[in-house]
Length: 296
Image: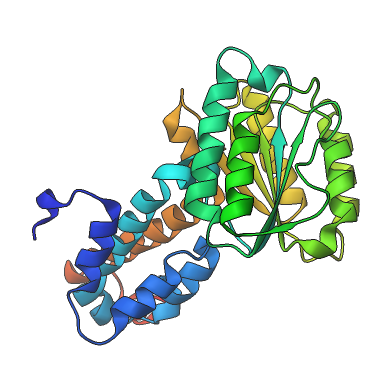
């Protein structure tokens, strides 16, 4: 099967995997759903400990892996919200009047239904908390993932309505009281919260200190550019992850944590290729050539 005949991202992975009979296909599929940090621990250049000779033989496969994974991350709910991490997840959803205006409510609901179908069905438990001026969680505590809980949540999402302001700190205070139930918190925002950035950052830095509870912050089709910058800072303050989705400026997604890490690794691969070309052309000194004889 030629690349021109490929019609889905899954086929990209299947095509790569079917080329060998050494069990790598199973290993690859076990790692594909990991966040990019963990994926690179297996498929990054450093993890593979390639010499330049190895890289010369394997460069198309290595760089092809990065391109295929990037394309996979740009499909479905992964494009909208990023790659969900964790097994017991709390999801905070900005249902402010601003985020639900001008037809945005229907788009948000449809996107959340994709998230449920594509990424929550394989988890152990979840907790949905829409918030506006006040938080309005679906249930008091986390629910186990099963057909009934997923169907209930789909109906709940279809009935969501605007809830006033965007009291992010209020929502965080409530969910952090239940933090022992979760191993990951997703924050979906479509605009700036009611509180200023400095106050939100201070609260998060103090609230999550000592907790192994990463925040996955999603800028969901934010209208204000400064809002995306603020949300990225919130992710950094919490030592968490950031994802940016924009229907107007699709290139903004490339600052998202998972995709940005892949781009960095791809740039390293290109840098190694340039070094190889220089060596072949005799442009590097013997000492420098010896130092870069290994990719890492």
